[in-house]
Length: 286
Image 1: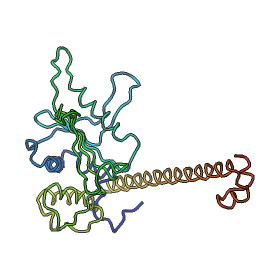
Image 2: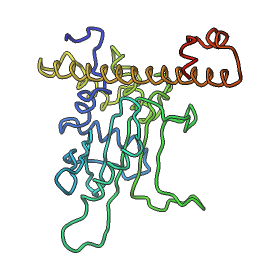
Image 3: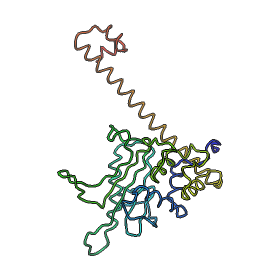
Image 4: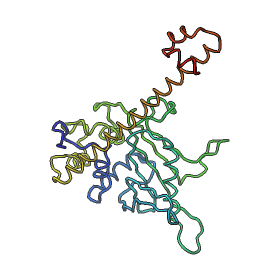
């Protein structure tokens, strides 16, 4: 499959694109800049990271494993799990909690231990909105900690979940002020850009655009990117098919329920058939 000539920069929502930009030693300054933008000065500035093995195994044979897109540690021992989520999936929050447990458990040394833990952060870059309008339409960045329900104080501040609802970020280039704005904009729009926007002239974004330019990749890297992009499209197609099927099944069940109700109330079968769109035989079998 050839590279799309209208696409100059990789799509960071692909596995290849996200890991190319954020999971390589050569580009760790991109990840550091992104993480510092998220904290916006609320945490001591991150100056270096160490990539850790993103494949987490259970304690015994046959235990379920977890594979993170990016897993790293800062000089103070804080662990960061950074995940790109292409589309909504069932039990998304449960998955985030589950993944965080590996970064907690692996801190336990052998032998005596006083249970001291370093910070663990799980960051989800989501190409979808959380269901059921959980947050307002203009609220796209969420930081969650364990809190006391009675007085709302932070009960435990070493476990943090950060979620970015990317589809909600609609700022234009002229509205970009903070580094957080700029990172959100570039992640949301990178694959659609043909030139580096004037608002993204910082040195770190110069490097990002250089690393994201598809034409500079080797033939093997270009093939890997094309395959990763195809996997993403196939995933979206599968999800859309399942969603459409679910809607169709829901409509069919609603149609049968309405027919049962009309039949129970003595409505003639020919009238039910005409109004609901079922055959008399189908209604008679209800």
